[in-house]
Picture 1: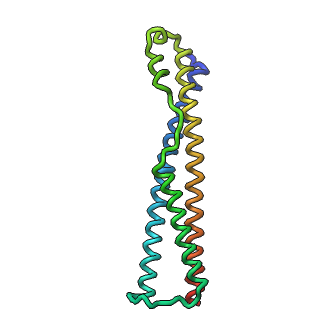
Picture 2: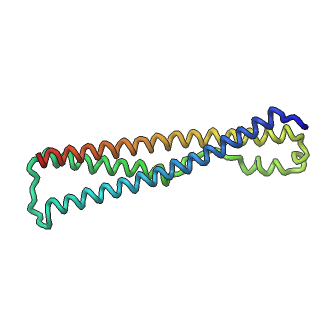
Picture 3: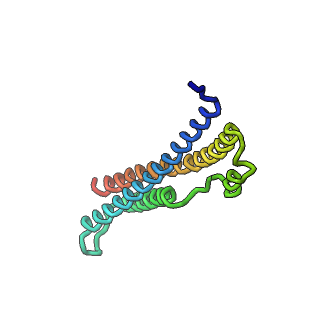
Length: 168
């Protein structure tokens, strides 16, 4: 029975962390999609309710001007939430990957016969660099996801206040 070296254990751990961060990136981008969909749906509902309440006539007037300001604030906050979610979903945040030069260097004849522990350490180093940079980008995206969600909750609250003022 051969004994596993510490390097093998570390390399496996680093590779697993890299896979976990890549999966986290996909999850965060999926949440961004969900938040965009939710914001769009809620904005559609707001406009539908506005048409339903006011009717086809353009002569509808709010009973209280303060309600209008809360409604406008809710709309702006929904838009801000959607923008944050779109950022998470679509904009690529740069992260470090193994350079083309390093990849080519690994298969050159002068490196191809390197000892296994040296090659393993080199690969683990590159995986670690990528993992740390993806983690940093994921942390940034997670902040935008949380911000977008908080903005949605705030917009729903503002909408509720607007309706409450208008109806009561």
